[in-house]
Length: 349
Ligand code: P6P
Image (cartoon, rainbow, N blue to C red; front, side, top):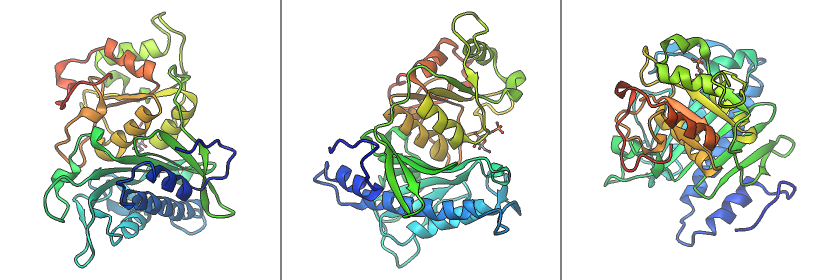
């Protein structure tokens, strides 16, 4: 693989092609999915950046399958991604946070050998106050027979992802993705409309600088979780306290921790024993990125990417980021009612 530095001007298209050349058997379909996601990211960025002026801020009167009020931009971003992929012939089905069921490829269009799961605009309640938001995506190979995507194709453990990534709409628009060959970051140059390689081979520092957690749920956490947070805060005398940084936008919190070293925690609590974040299109893709950057992702009892999904929109507790900090989670084992069934080895986390 060509060794790039952040100073060489490498477009995402060139980088994807160079990565594809490492696999002679590659057909180019996965590369095509990544191209299309980059295009969708640019289109969503354009909408996010002009939302305040184009009267597309704010909420609709609708709620999504999660029961959450749908922001206008949620719907727009969802439509952009569905339209970018529904006729390209690379996917056999999609699933979105914004839609209750599988999104099938329309009759008359060729179906491909991959499935795409995505959160079109995570953290969208932050848009009206100009806090960074993001798109998160995850790609698997189809495992069922026939051409039509099935639910079984969607409900695969995260360790079987073939690609994953996110676009963050922040002070700049960045796309970070992995195909299992490291995690790589690209920054959109708006003057030419290209994503340029800016963060080749991202490595997350083993030790965290930041702790991202919402303490409002502290009274509902099981005692081992409260003890773990006291550890991260240096209150049990074992380690120095971490700086708390919590934006309330998963992609923004994760991206800062990925580059600077940190751990994002959304623990289980007695009111929601599986936490809030979704396994398939939030936790698993970011877990893949984190592990490819040398980090880890746990649900408090084991590796997130070993969880065997049973439902499209199921949730999972999440401890995500710097390896040493996620490994610390194991020192605070949870009561059995918080432990999720998983397949294969328990993994490092
Ligand atoms: P809380 C945004 O709504 C989101 O899904 C994630 O982006 C974010 O990390 C989390 O919820 C924040 O949740 O309960 O702390 O407001």
